[in-house]
Length: 493
Image (tube, rainbow, N blue to C red):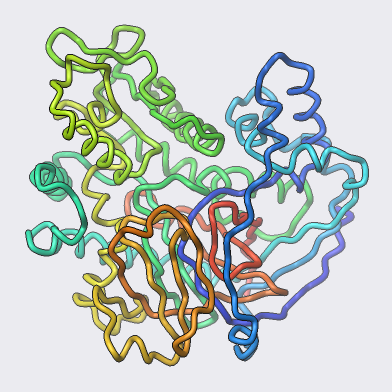
């Protein structure tokens, strides 16, 4: 395979992470980047600017003297490697040229324009390996954590005072509860998929949070990392090889009647474009009719107050890309106007909160994915080996914890407005739009550091069981929205 591997085994523990987001792969595929660039440039499409856009750097504040005090530790189960990419890996064999999912993914790659040069041919790239035994341990822990998060969700929905801390309008409490009761009774509203953010070493697995209402890194886990690894000729097996088939099986059991249509609603966002298409592909494999809808384009009111698409079909089954917090914010806005819904255009919350519409992920996952569930978990399972101490109010014990602590805004996403504190000093912080939200406090648990990179382990769960693993890797101490995803391979002990 003409692959030269440099086994880089150094590992240092010195940080934590709290976000979930996409990968930028195109710098791994210079030939493909060049073709994408030519394809877009020669067309009349307005997406050229997409390839020129570069992600903003994370607004990270770090005290170097603080991080420098962290002692290095060796990690044996997870290794970082450098590979010389053979020229033949640049000939596009790994993609499906007819796939709009693949092209949507590469349109998202912000490095495409700068990577489209011969200088990148024959360059080096990094990838990671994880031992089989450790992968099994992580998968087992992920399934257990899913059950614990669901148990905590049940506790919250049984306690109105506790539910108040999640910031959900009282008018929606009954709807959230009904969604969960329906799930627990087997009548529907079942969770389809979710992604955990974990810190791991050779012996422990610790949960930062559960992204039970997000699709970030889905396509990367289930498709891209395997295809690139095969094109380069990497050893090992793909940790996401079963994700697509598990999603298809989940759609087969989703309860969508034969002939009914699944509407996949997505925002005008390049990342959401390829994730939505990946989910669509899995649903189509299950024999389900599908339709992609950007925002609420073409939607209108039917004669009985139902929502119709632009082909005159009633909207009854929806998979969405928006977080439920966004939908609830839209609901608050329309409630403030006191305008009867059918006297105005259809809004996002009209569709996703309608009584006759089944949505994935279901409404109850707004509890599961909220940072406010972290203290509830700790109260229910104090000292559990997969949990970090978490509190609604910062106690003296956590304030003085030798590892430090992290502040997270309730309802926050992608590491925004997260602050890391150790020995009374701010180690790192990330700005964002959630600074007005109430905070929760969580024990700081460092991520493994490999050659200056923090490595976050992200298991994808489908119907509560681990169906794939993907890595988020960043030089910064807080993982942000543009932190790359790197290829992971599973190898024998």
